Length: 383
Image 1 (tube, rainbow, N blue to C red):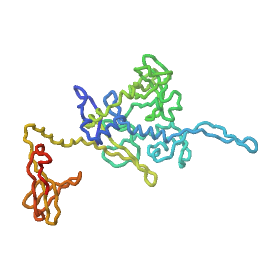
Image 2 (image 1 turned 180 degrees about the vertical axis):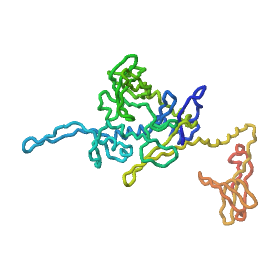
Image 3 (image 1 turned 90 degrees about the vertical axis):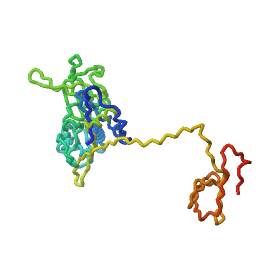
């Protein structure tokens, strides 16, 4: 499988120019996929293409609706009265493929309709933690991990990716959005709770280097929460901790990704699912092949004209007369005992003829002359 996880060798970054060594299609693929990768401070590379597609699917398939009940007023009239908001998940092939319909559905509800009543807080149940075998098997009945790394086992990521700038539909309804500060400890340490599409709800301690991102108890932007270990507290309690890092600081360029791919340190793969006639879903993955650039052979350089070279001698108009009475005026390009190759002009159109010697009655060659020496009056007359 084509791969990538970039590590710095002694003496600096990996060899430059790997992107330029790919052909045009491979360059377009690497450029498109580079925005899905992040590189953690420990040097590991993670591909988030599945995470991006899962977020887009979640936004399409999870909806919040206001529920009305018609209350009877008098013998005739009924008035709609709001009974609050309810969440629904679409019962579609893609939602079922990712396990979203089954995981979010409220227990005991009917799951046969196009929309099923849901509880988004149950999202962690949708994360299938079974590991994908790397033996080349064709398909599996469970969804792939949201983040993949060639050098790490599946579902081994411990970081949290948070989009506080454009949160998902459920996170927008939470107080403070995807990440909310519940207590400030000072020196850049905060107690937080939040929501991530990759892990569901979470809470713990957060180390923030640039405290300007904290505004009125909320954190604005796109961030990766890098695990920082477990913090033990008096009483035997232990809480996870993270370090807040801006996502753009962990992004990679297409040149970096191409260089890492060239070294075979990570992978580029495409995941897809298919639904069977009985509604079962199978996932499969395939390799994405990268091809090197093949430079076209250059044209031979044209020789520079020599000003001292003699002026080529050309024939004046030649005439060829055939046995059937046709005749042509032009120039003989070459001739042999069997054929004569003749070029003639009709208006602005030039035609090259290959005439058999047996068909030619007479061939008249014009006088040899230098192109600039003969005037029209001195040119040989046509026959």
